Amino acid sequence: MPVVLDTDHLSILQWREQPACDRLLARLAKLAPDDIATTIVSFHEQVQGWMAYLNRTIQSRRAAPPKCQPTQAKSTR
Image (cartoon, rainbow, N blue to C red; front, side, top):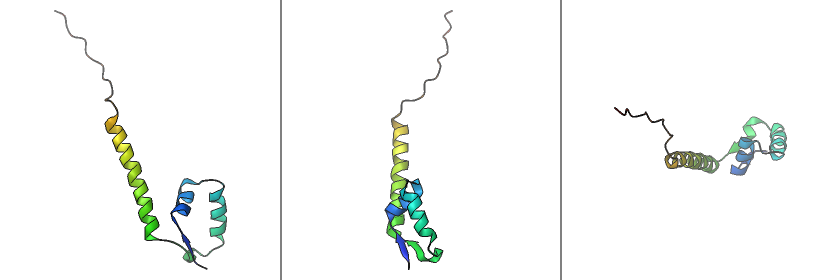
């Protein structure tokens, strides 16, 4: 019998959330690989999550103050 994995299932597998991940993997192991599928909607939601993560990372780097650089001592001639 075919099984369709939704976004929650994919997230459990991706992040290896326990004990749900082990239970899900055990159930999937009983199925033929051709009977396991996901949808384009789940793929799209996963990509949206990755993009949001990347955008947060980029924004936090832009907001961070520049690294301090040592100043050179000025000559007092």
